[in-house]
Image (cartoon, rainbow, N blue to C red; front, side):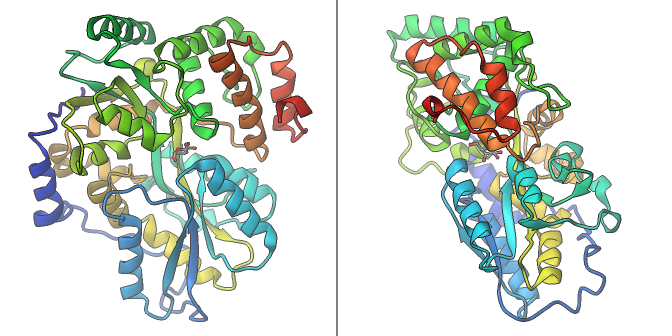
Amino acid sequence: MMARFRHWERPLAWWAAGIVVGVAAVLLTTAVTALVDDPGRLEDNGEIVILSGRDDSLGGQRQELVNQWNELHPDSRARIVELSALADAQRSEMLARAQSGRGDIDVYNLDVTWTAEFADAGYIQSLDESRIPEDGFLSGPLATCRYNGKLWALPFNTDVGLLYYRSDLLDLPPQTWKDLEDDVAEQRARSGNDVDGYAGQFADYEGLTVNALEAIGGAGGSVVDESGDVVIDDHRVAVTEGLDRLRKIAPTGVPALDEDSSTQLFRSGKALFMRNWPVKFKTLTEDLEGAPPVTFDVAPLPSDSGVLGGQNLAVAAGTDRPRAARALIEFLTSERSQQILFERGGLPATRKVVYSDPVVRERYEYVPTLERALEHAKPRPAQPHYARFSQVFRSAVDGFLRQSAPLPDDIQDQLVGALKGRLAPASDD
Ligand code: GLC
């Protein structure tokens, strides 16, 4: 079932839901603190500093939750240090802070793909799994918190690629990537190229890796299998088909878009489709400042090929406030906090109860769409050298999309080497 939304019909309802009624008053429990044995006794020797990427939620809900924590814990106050909106820039900055050994960070809000890297490097502390009632979390996001048999974090918000489409121009979303390609061609012809193709994230950063993996998955191909082995050579035909399609459906010239600029393009009415994360649904429906109306619906990506994203909260290895850090993480990932992040901020919750609640389902029509996309979401490899792998992969993708260069003959070896931490050849740097 697809969410059906006319931009001018619903903002009032959403606004009313958020401000007047507040979040659905259906989750009566707040998680019992289990990560800390005596939650009344936290260290009070200074602020708990959370290093995090930009808060994309509507109304800055991460900060709102921290404000709530601070009211409840005046002696163990927390502060968010916010970094760039771009995943790669966040990672570099977080690594630099972790490597400095200054011990001035207590909690890292890590992209799902860096948990293994930070754990392996000894920058974060593992959590005692036996103390966490884990069955409340969605299993996919929780799995991204594990590495090497241990739990290193709790999932703050999850993410999955979704297909936003102009419902005034299309009756139904495409079910296959071939249909999507046909829709783009038809719309280009009909509009004299005024409404261009599929606004994805095509700039040279993690967004491009994700978009390429989704297009490849949509063609039935794989780059890495479920056990983390590189299998691109076995899937050359599908990989080429998927990337070829991405080149055709991308807006003309494959512009270097990121999450924000693809949203702007879609919002301006110049794209038939947008690939983006769920939080943009809320941004597009409620934060309409200066935007001409665009009528849209949202659907899972064709063939359910969306990639799993999200952020995980981990305790820094060098903190001298580990009890307070753990209690804060538990607070931020509790049912109540997850409900607020989703209902007010639009960030996909990591707790099952938020999706199954009848009030939430009735109020937010797109919940079944999101749920289905999350159910099928494909994780990226959880390995310490993932970032190098991603760089090597997308440098080949970039060449393919922008210079029509075929994938390198030795791409399989390059990717295997990258996952083992081998340096890429100088020409690929
Ligand atoms: C979002 C996702 C994250 C992904 C990033 C790529 O922040 O949550 O997992 O790596 O986008 O741009």
